[in-house]
Length: 402
Ligand code: ARG
Image (cartoon, rainbow, N blue to C red; front, side, top):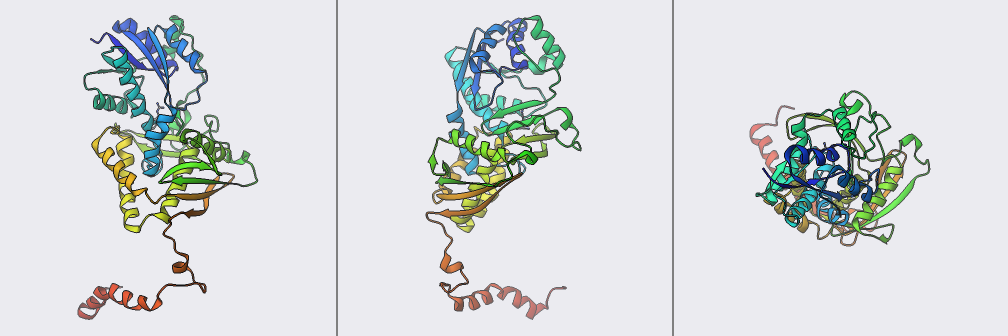
């Protein structure tokens, strides 16, 4: 059995109980590692750190990974327009690999022979933690106390109380929430019935559209080679830009998703998300691609995008295929420089304009006005040859049954 373990610590009930439980039941020393990926915690990080120590951790560390997470994980997903099953921008799926990277680094620093996570056996996050750890550090054991202890929520609360772990939990809060700067995932409670409309209460990043400002708002996002670099002319680092866009768009009540998705472990699960920043940026980015990418490249990229999203969802971030797809996407982004204007209305966010430094939209080719430079005489021969095969069938074999 391993002797020292680095636990991915959130400051919540399960991972706080896990600190003590691992020490008591498995007799191991626990280093608690909290990774700041932009989640809005109820408590500040120092309180969270002290809670881990109070629960019995030998050491508790907080790593600020916001900029790294935005740059190295969210950005490639954005440039790939990555939406799992066409909808979900991979909020939780993207954060696990960066957390694991820091877990492994901490395991090396503290001479630990294992890492641990607080996931249950029914979800995707255990898959992502474990597969990512094996990919980076096959020598480390991965421990999952929550899969072993069989506590109900009540049991966990009793355990925390009995061991004097300082944690306030709302007994009536039925939701399981996972959040980072790419958005927020909401599970459990009333939404486990897929017919039940999502209640308002668990939302935190999006306003109820009926409460949103009536007056519309417009924002302009500038991209350089597929990287969002400024908002309304103000340059800012990506992790701040995602937050700013999210606040504006979320304020208009847009960015909510309600879906039943296919988990890696074979369960269909009803999930509610709010991802105003991520979804608005993907919307804008994909639109800018429509004016900057050559047709064949755009179509091939579109074919690969769902595959990219599946890989990330399924915990294969550290796979050679993801790397290779990123190389393809990176190359595709050379011309994706320009601006997209988004308009916000209550419950709506949509593109109203786009312009690109080296866009392929050519006014003189497209216009029906006097400036028209298209060679109309070329069209007749082109169209005849385009249809020559079908014309030949009709002449030789007769037209198809209509
Ligand atoms: N279903 C989403 C996913 O698999 C969200 C998971 C949220 N995780 C959580 N611990 N609540 O990516």
